[in-house]
Image 1 (cartoon, rainbow, N blue to C red):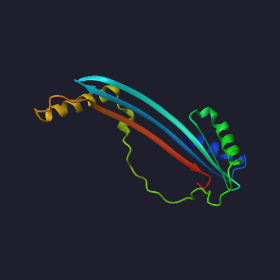
Image 2: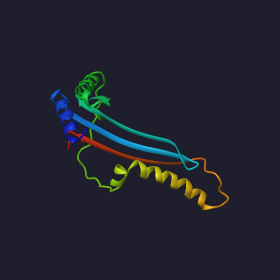
Image 3: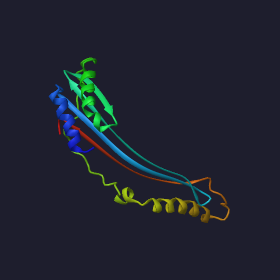
Image 4: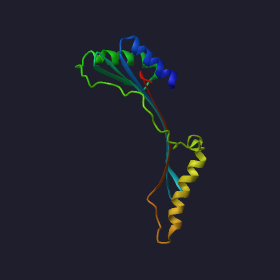
Length: 158
């Protein structure tokens, strides 16, 4: 799901009569590893995606969401339909364009870390705990998690 996907939904909602539209897109991946006694106890990978559309039509708010990109047309239609069943509210407005700070917190290495390197990291965390002090004889579990996520918010004001 990318900006073009979001713009397609935004334009469809406007064509269907929405005065204001906001599209929220989210993708994430995760690799989690737990080690115990220098062996891998669990290794889990996951990927999630989802999107939602918020519309304002005649001061009435409508909303719908899904996780299947193939359902985008029905998501737009449901958002428009749900706006017909809410009360108008003059405070139903979307944010206008404003400045924002770009915060650099993304590390490309996380997205491309080989599974073997992630496993080595989990095992080294456990070993580092044991090596810290001879009185430490057991670690309940050592865990590492590598997550990336991308969020895009597109609205009819920019």
